[in-house]
Length: 414
Image 1 (tube, one colour):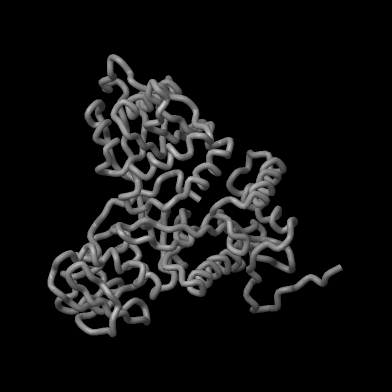
Image 2 (cartoon, rainbow, N blue to C red):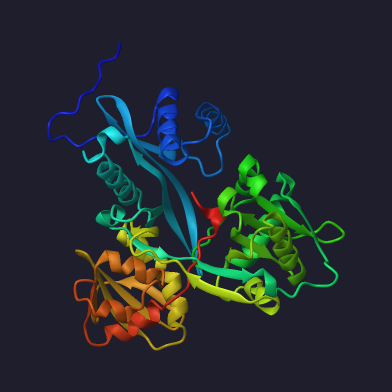
């Protein structure tokens, strides 16, 4: 029998990837007990084994799951996927952290903190510019994460919808054969919105192989069978909500709205999440009374932090070049934590150079929110602990970090 490794007093917890089938099962079971207490765990474990054997498109064994151990026993874990976040002309390599949990009997003993430090260390070692997660309040903020995105929600008053006399589309459940059409629709609606990710058709097909995905996903089709829209609805008690939809026509949008109405006959309102400025939202506005807004928990929900700061600056260069446009050349110094990066801006150009020019001193936690356009630069300038700017720097920052309305689609959840 192998000797069990015990943690010495003051020694940080052991964090590594699961190495055996038993450790993989223990990691998955810990996550399921915490987040899905009513599911058949043995059935889910069997499905997880099949996924590992099939190696899903986002799966990389040495990063797919990380775990914390106490005296050789797995007591904490998190998932990690690498994706490319779409940010205008840039593709920002992002470590997507999910399923963070520790066993109840070790909470408060530093194992959750060790998992978060592990994710940060991986990002810095591998030069990932960004880390992203969806999490609870009052934990991740201690590890440098800040709220970065709140999806817009739109409540539809069904009594005031102007329904078409002659519907042009039918609605059915999605199937794996729809993968290419769903990807086309996703790209048409979300690719220009900060918060979407590059996605291959294989990943779309993989998701459609999951039973829950097919059960909750509807598609709208023309008379000749062309798929022109899809809708992700919530299940059970939240059936009146749809977390994502995309359509290439007004008829498909209204057909999905009617299908959603018929699935929840007791509902007086339906709630859809859609990006501001989307064509689908405009089509809804033409036929229905909407009440739009955001649920914005102060320290919970989608949260991000910088990974490797130098890699992040490099990744942002195409964004800054596009935003600077045809303005005259200027220099700016970004002081981020203890590091400094010189930025040379010019017509359609942004490059890193030796530091020179007015300085903007950023707290990394504020800079990640500015990157997402979640808060205006002026708000940070009111807080010297978050941002200070030498003369001339503030006007440049306002150009490089405008306010935006990011939106992370439901199907990009992890």
